[in-house]
Image (cartoon, rainbow over all chains, first blue to last red; front, side, top):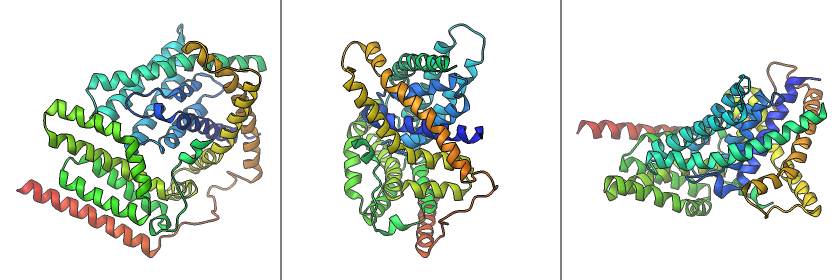
Length: 165
Length: 244
């Protein structure tokens, strides 16, 4: 079996899930007070079974999801950059040897997204609010979706992998 | 599932819909970039007028108005925060207008370009074929996975799953019986897709052939020249503006 093709298929399907989920909860996944619950999928790259496929999956998924974003091109570019950076650092942290890696990974991802989307998009490009408000409104939403929902999701999925071994 | 309809593209027979997707991509990105750079009211008004003409030609004005309504709250936020920080009404109007300009550039592109056309455009611009294939596959599987989601959701509700009970953590955990079967199904499906790709010889030749090649037509060239003229006007306006 060709593993490279399987990875490609996995990238496509993860990005479909990301895009569907984001559009499904549309009013709360875009904008200043956002809790994009599908950002919990960013933590998928923590699992070695997903790895790079998850990184590219959530990145591509964000491109597609943000086609629906009312905030246009800047949201497509910056949101995608945010997901790429966040999922890459999650994958990097998963290989470190420290305690509570998953919590650290989730927190780092949330801060990165809040910096790029909150400050980059909302403050610098659209100048919608003060710099602190722009950062924290995104950060709080990411705490819920990446840290809370994400960790619950990852624990559940890693259980399936453990069972299937 | 109503959210699939949220993808605003609708097949219409207009000049704009028939344009080459690469040309539309270039023009819409160009306008959005000028919008991000500029803070000049004349330029914003000029570009917005041009986009209104494009929207009118593509018969999508109504769609555009509806999307603006959804953005009203955000526009209001931009205007108030600008007014509060600078105490100038002009500043508030400029920033809101600029926001409308940037977002409409992306809107008309997606109103008039089908996902298949976008995939083709990406491939022929020179985006690596693995990426453009992943993109096309992902678009293709959105309705499939949405149906799958609906099936699992219904099946678990029949079994007595309650999503509207308990605190935030309990509610999140209630979603797991939906997400886990969905993931198992997705992982299973990746084997099917990769087998199908392999059977069709994907990756066998370096360069893929295409069923439908994109070719620029006279209308595309007219549109491109028109766009270059707009950019020229803006540059001339800048030179004039800064020399006075």
